[in-house]
Image (tube, helix red, strand yellow):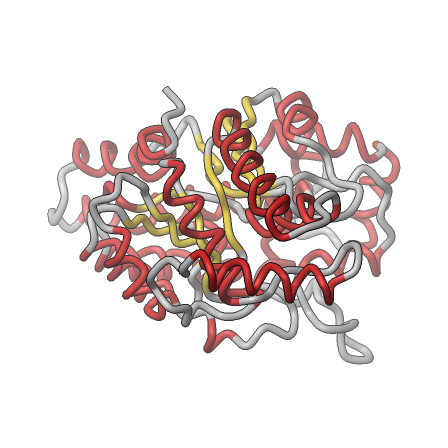
Length: 368
């Protein structure tokens, strides 16, 4: 029996504060560009089946009950009570929360309270820059205010995260942009954006990445599957190789988030570069009953001290539950098989399980 009594969720978002109907709930199960095809449901996915397997018992229902029955029970309990039961039933004891998404999502302290856990903030670089731009009238004031904001954020957060791959793609020039290049890009962006315009200029994205590297905090980089409509060929983590090489030896850890279906590429980079780590959690949520296969593929390439669990959950507390349960199941199945075959000792398997579940994250993010 492989035990993981404590889980650190090294990347997630808050949960919705509002009651959800069937359509709204389904929309959060899978990130699609529209509703499911007529006559079908997004519950008929690996994630949907995993929700029906692991979440109903936490609300007093039988596993695999129908979606309608499950959502009726959820409404009966209310959004606060159902969220509390689900989060506390996940076994996650620490949440690292990216607060950079819009919507009525709980803040880290609310998530901690509902889940009887600890929570720490991850600062999203692009949102930080957009907020600074909303209150900066000139190029020079923007750059000064941005530097001050990054410094202030680094004093309170446990990590920075970037969605440069989502906004532009990961094939960015690896070196820091020059001061003149940055000022020119800021001027063009401020002149054309209006209030609330998203940052997608590759020069400014690079400036943000290198500002984060200079802070010394871990920097999380989104890769693989992400937002609907995203060209995933632009988010293959192997495209980061030159940036990874350029940041080696500077004292900043890089964490490659999500990764799937390029999880082997992320694991390879974690194996080659001492400051690179690979996330394994969100890939398991997407693959459901196949999660053990995906986890084994990550373990083929990445050193065991470089792999971290996360849920990647956003909106639904069910996704925290599914991520935690699938991770534990997959870990037990993979490591348990290797122990049974004599390839690993039980002592080593238990030690590695603890590293993936919480130990690596505590070391990387300085949680102890």
